[in-house]
Image (cartoon, rainbow, N blue to C red; front, side):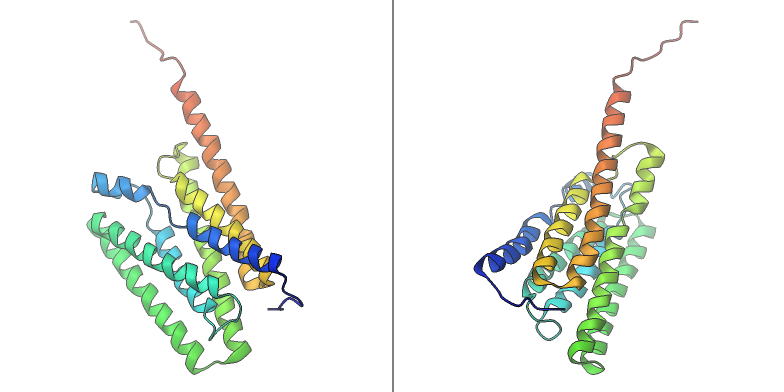
Length: 231
């Protein structure tokens, strides 16, 4: 990470505003209102929330001063994000069918075990620049995994030609989160932040275009006249 040569008030305001914007757009999940109301997860996938939880935990760790300097807002936003994602995963487990309940519970335990292992390795075996590189590359991998996780949902949308199980607000918040942290990373000159979020921005745009296309398609199909056979 290359620090900027000079820090102007404009630079500071823009960089912090980009990170704060992420806080307001990241964790809106109306999908769970439907899950709680219907007391069923239906065909919604829990994997995006598992990936998001792991990503929030790793990015929270990366943003702490003991790992990286000057990106404390990354830690602040992702600490709150980890709480939200934990609640979402817990709700998903509560209302899922038994096979999915067991699978999601196992994945949740695995997430916390992996995070504990990352902390132990980075504190006990690494220091300084090496620690930042180790956690930074892990954060990049986790971010890309999180952004790629909705691909299975996109496949379902294309196959069924319906956006019912592709939550719009999940796609929108993913896009807004990516573009705000991309701006934040660029202003902070931190490629561990702006590279994966640049990829996430592109994937977010693809998801939104896919949603718009099949949403419009389904509306057009619903307006087609019914064919009545007279025998």
